[in-house]
Length: 256
Image (cartoon, rainbow, N blue to C red; front, top):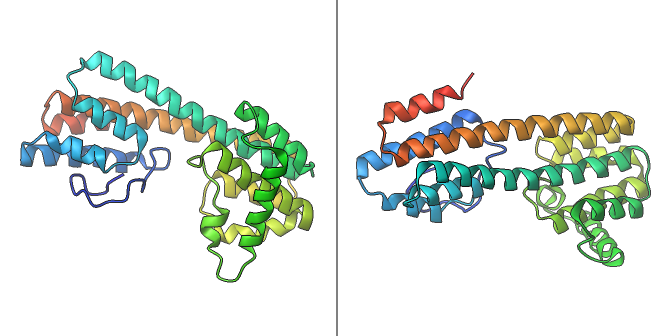
């Protein structure tokens, strides 16, 4: 998402609504409102949409340029939020499943079969999946390897790539032992996967890893739902051309 609305120079996918603090999201919409008031040009919303990779915010910016009635915008935004949160829930589930498999010393083949079940079918053959995972293992062992990029696991990765990354960790644990996974932790961003991997590497049992990952997932998705609700209402306030102060009041209603 563009950190400078209307600037048109940002990379298309810098932020994600699941990761953004509530305050940062409110500040984003307030900056949109301030820019619109200063420029008095609603085509700025289209420009911002074209430079925004965050899918829910992009949806709202598109809705704000439409002639749709507010209640329809609200219903469509709830539908979009539901689709995106369902996708994220599935991917957090894939992470939990893999980490539980690692914690209990499960055969990586069984882990991959389980991942296929979560995805509604394996994205590629077992042979090909293992070839890709072993290829990642080789790449990660090369001198000057970009380990933060190679090892990263998050909900933004498409199912097939996420499955391959997760299989890599299952294979690494099987080949070198669970404790060896600790060497990857310094290269991972803070988050639920890194936290769960640390637990599995340190020998916590699968039941605890599962319950902890489930709690983290539910907290993340619950917060995301609230942020999506706030973004929707702020967008509708901007769409209705309310004052900056009133748009700010909308944001404050969602804050503790």
